[in-house]
Length: 340
Image 1: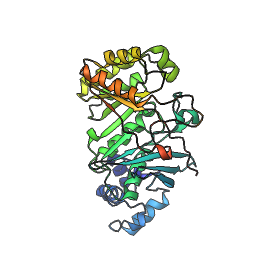
Image 2 (image 1 turned 180 degrees about the vertical axis):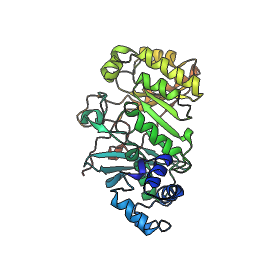
Image 3 (image 1 turned 90 degrees about the vertical axis):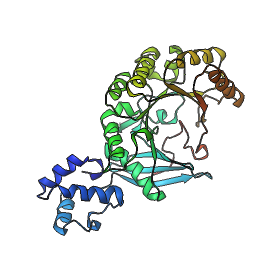
Image 4 (image 1 turned 60 degrees about the vertical axis):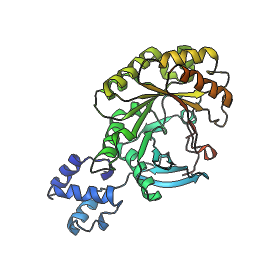
């Protein structure tokens, strides 16, 4: 069992079972999250016999092991983590002046299979545990010797298809005994798992929701994102509007710009209509080519035309400044190309 995936109540139950007072759980959590210690033997305020019992129970602190990294000139860094069963996942560190963001994975591979995404080509292997999710963020903060201020579930996998583990991880990232990250600095991206969007809205958390939209007609969206055949566009947008209304959090509509595919005048008009009148923000994303991919990025002037058209109609919009493309760490490029 991995300590990193346990919440305070679960860890308290564990230490009580081992014959120790409840406050030992707080001591362990302080060592893990505040001091970054993974070895029970280094937790100096724990009795030696208790340290030995923890080890004898087969307990370990950490859930992931750094296994490789690649960094760009601007400091964006892609990490490969090895899991206990030998699988690997990638996460990305994105430094900015006032924020330090980690883009973390929630699954090994992805079951959605979006046609423009490298992860989808990898196939789906398994869900990550809450500990494996949280430990990506913790380990990157320790390696960079900095406090991670923002975390986004935009790495490998569909977060809402691994709902329980993703939600538990978000609570651990936010907890006062965990990484103490503000809920409003946490974002979940989804390709449109409608029941889970409604469920997330009812959790009464202040986390942000981002929708991988990428098309404004069911025909095209189903070709790009097969999940759209199960949850059509109208249902997805209705769920997102409900999320915005219940949480008062602005929903981000992610729109990858694909040359000659979704960047026509009709696409633009439908995008504006879809985004008007509710609390959302359109994030136009220049496409990052993947090896063997069939798509090309829209020209910069097309992206600017989309931006201007939306803003003229009072739709909040921006063009994402992509980071990490040189090491295949940008949007849609994660596919465990680093070697274990």
